[in-house]
Amino acid sequence: MQTTELSLRSLHLLSPGLADDFAQQLQAAVIDCRQRPSLAQKREVTIKLAVTPHPEDPDDVSILPVTTSKTPARKIDPVRARRTRANQLQFDFDTEDF
Image (cartoon, rainbow, N blue to C red):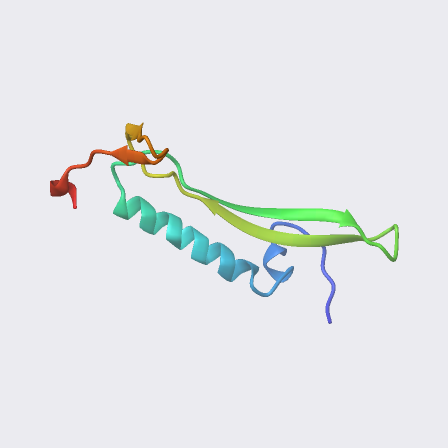
């Protein structure tokens, strides 16, 4: 086992799957941009480090690396629904859309 200082340059050494997770989520964000170019909102890929005190030694910390991503939701127009006498909901739709 080797030891190194935690920095941006050594971040990939923190966890074996961190770089792969980041690359996969980045690739998914790029693919989403290509598939939905008319959607101008940003896609986000983030690496977070959750740092907590280590339970066995107050001088040490536990670091949990987490990759997350966010893609904008598709814009869906609201649909008007009516309540029936039996307290169910009914709505109108175009058969041409399906």
